[in-house]
View: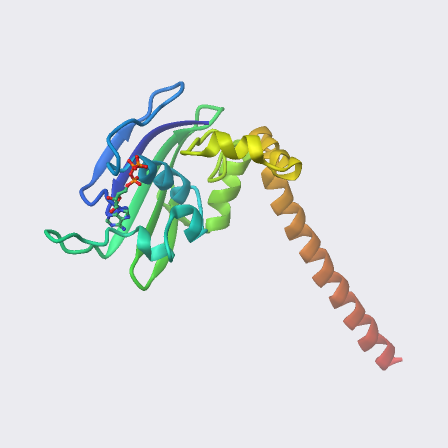
Length: 193
Ligand code: ATP
């Protein structure tokens, strides 16, 4: 998958709508301290379904909305749009929007979808909010210090098999509820004898 464009509006320090083109190959973000380099990477993670406020350096998810400055009032919403092309050449536009008091909503190519659908689509394409392709500050040191189980997770994400774990858990939970239904049915049937 190739990320082609990123559009931000009201996301953290990006109060004005901003659009970035991302060319093929390795992209580095450089700039003075506090200019928003990490916020950009967080915007990519966020639109891919990141839901841990800690990894967004926030107290709660609404903290990603522009909080205002002495000169500018806060915003009521934040929106990030990511354009990508998958390996078969299909274009995909993913939008995540959060409004104060209303939570997050996702769209893929204009259609409303669940957070889980977005996370799975990226996981299957060997990318996503925890993708090793997104290298933030301190990440290299973290990889060196990682435990073998954590390294395995990184490898699974790079190999595009992370989505299989989610599907396996879903299938296991469906199996458990079907087994419970069968047990109930047997109880009812034995009561009818
Ligand atoms: P460094 O090089 O120091 O790591 P950086 O370029 O990665 O900095 P970021 O950490 O991305 O910079 O951006 C920090 C800036 O974003 C700070 O000025 C902070 O006030 C601003 N910021 C973060 N969240 C919000 C928000 N919700 N509303 C407004 N501004 C925000």
